[in-house]
Image (cartoon, rainbow, N blue to C red):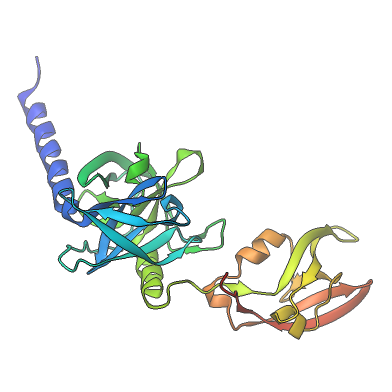
Length: 294
């Protein structure tokens, strides 16, 4: 015999989840770019945040609003390092959804809300992992690690992640091996604000092409394969063939990690390089520049 109290509890939960989706739906849109479909949400009046990874590199962009109306969108800016892209639409009547920086907790129920051609879609899961800030493979600073155990439709990528109270934890994105991550609210607010004002996120630039090389006695250095004649490396008298063995007194260890450390906050900072030039130790002071736009 089915317990009536259990049925009532399930109905209450079902209704509550449906209400949460209904509250978010007016702010969630479908995003269409060249051979790509995703979701996004209204961040501020006339501005929509979506997942950079799900957005085509070129071509026209359109947004399908709640209810099915399609409007053109322009790219205000994108940051592949944090997976945040910002679109502009000529519609000031759209309803922004406020992001919340409440920390996520492992085991907490989570709803992913996206849009398919203007109609909301939703998936229920839970926070499987929550932790401190981390740096993406492309060098972006992500303010918190939030991983979800959830089955996410591909066209829902870029939509909202809601907790059981209806707070928006951030934006759901697909990671390698179909893992689902949340780009947290704090990261979106920081990055989208810069994209709104500048269209891009500054990245550090050395003006050096580097490759890993083994060092005598063990360890890994970075050999300079080429030097931008107008870049920071050339101004610091770093030369082709030099081997960087230490960065601010610390062993290089990994060229990849060194380059990933060239975030926006690195621009303008001075670093001390310990070099080997034809076997002779050399010291250089380099001021990190801003990567030129391509």
